[in-house]
Amino acid sequence: MAGPGFVRTLGKRDGSALRLQQRGAGGVGCVVWDAALVLAKFLESGARALPRRAVLELGAGTGAVGIMAATLGADVTVTDLEELQDLLNVNIEKNKHLVTGSVQAKVLKWGEDVKEFLPAPDYILMADCIYYEESLEPLLKTLKELSGPDTCILCCYEQRTMGKNPEIERKYFELLQMDFELEKVPLEKHDEEYRSEDIHILNIRRKKTEFPIVRSLTMLSDPLERRERVSINSKRLSPKLFMAHLQNSSRWRIGDET
Image: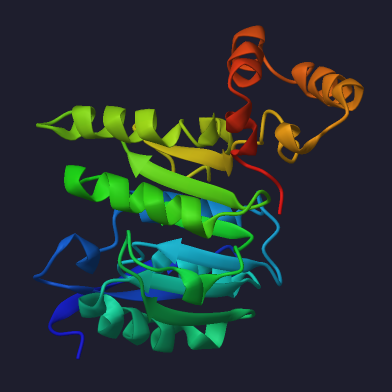
């Protein structure tokens, strides 16, 4: 059972409303946070095409964002720890009459195997998932393994200035930018009512490969062919990176196509 708590209502533009059960006591996943409301209403604005799209929500908590996506036609999997599955399923049941796509709840612990959730979804949704320093690297590992070149990650978070929050956010975005490109969604594109100066939405995508690595250059016996292949690829490398690869031909095997 979801346990004692209260219901949060989130109105929709068509006059209907999501009813989201919350727990009066428990962890951070037991309540609907403001960032979840902002992201849910941003999705409802039609800023992203959701009908028939595969959507996965990380750290879903009450499932507010993922369930909203399901009412907009997406095929959604809301994920969180085992202890939150009951609450997720309660909220799926409460709102199933509004769902025009599909929605299911599954256990996903960041940093662990994600094969069950592949192929990569069209969208990954995250609302207020940046709060524990020890969870940053597992979260980033999961994002890298779940996302494909065409996956759009929408991350909504409330910027907090107390305690270690600024340092945790700085570290998270520093690590994130090693593998992903980030673009902030302007505040004026947020829902007119559900917006705040300290709540941000980021559009995140995997970085595109900056240079296609040819199959091992050492496999090319013809010196002329080898020079031509190096020349072609050198145009896509910075001079420094190109020379590093040229000086150590074994590194050309890294990232070989299969």
